[in-house]
Image 1 (tube, rainbow, N blue to C red):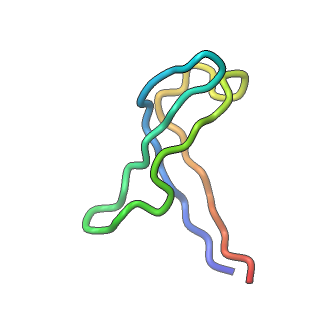
Image 2 (cartoon, rainbow, N blue to C red):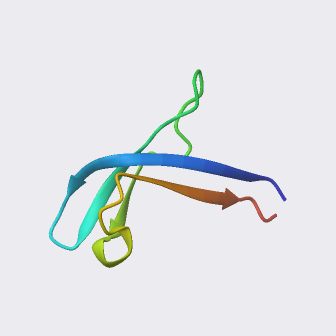
Amino acid sequence: MAEKKVKFEFEKENKNSVRYNEIPEEGMPPVIGSIYVQKWFAGNSKKIAITIAKVD
């Protein structure tokens, strides 16, 4: 199973969520792009990371 850690930085805040933009690795295209995370979880975080795994 291959895993990849994807890093994101704060873009903007909405009513109930926070939008983050992916920080792609140098010379590589984005894996995910932008994501929305609910405010109750994101809190005041300016940077987050997500680990994604291929399971097949």
